[in-house]
Image (cartoon, helix red, strand yellow):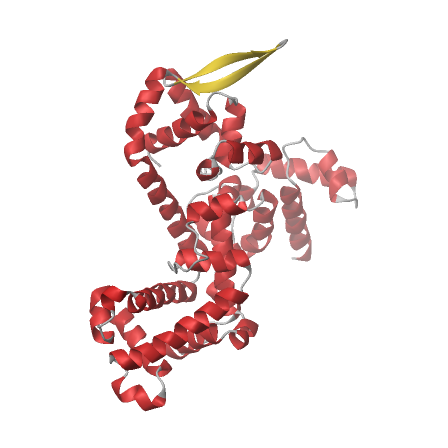
Length: 394
């Protein structure tokens, strides 16, 4: 993330608050706090797009971005007096407002680009190859259905529509084969014709609408948004964030839940649209797309980030998981990949935990934690205990 974009995000958030909150609140907002006062202020000042936008950064990085604005006289702390109390509130200077006016010209576009980059990274990290094949196929199929229903393309047959979409040869071939299989038997010889295409696409759209009517509300909204299905229930990402009080990271969680319906055997039987798509992909790939195969193993995702050089807290921020959960992943990863334990829990911290374990004896995790400084994590303790048990077994 470049400094200019950071500057825009922090300044825009400050500008919307109008000097009525302090720097601590601003940092909590940008890092995605779910505390009540943040939730309330987000709605009061229309801060939905900015809540959690820096959740992948640590607190120091956000503080430095704010400090840079102050050093350059773009932001300042104003002392607000209320009765006997003084409240230090952060606000933009006159120069800061002028600079923000210039940055706003392409700020919204850059925000959208930034969120798109984060989505792409999360998709590559957590969605398996099969999951990405499914997502790409749904993008192409729903684009075709959207064009088919558009009056501007109402005279085009399948060949002409595919040319308009400018797909790769492989993607175009997938759609052709899928539509051929979905075409009623008596029209298969002319499945590319507009008449046969109308019958097939009408059936697919009806099945898709039935599915959307039965899916949980958030997952149905995410399907419409992700695959640009602009029916009367459609909401943009920004509207979804505002309507449900979500952060950007939450939308990706909903997306994963939505995709998981396509991997469920029960939902294949329940929804003809899911059944037809997944049966086709099973056949093309020569293997099942069901179950957890649409997602990577969660511990393996942690290992990928570890190999990139991320620390445990950085992995937790990147994945939106608790630090203790990441340590739990390493209980399996350390013996499986022959990792050095001190690369996960520094040697001096592991030694201190070991001493606390010996002092507490065969006691509870809480008793061990109480003998350690407050910055020690239950996950670290569990990891050291697991490694000790493994060493004894060996």
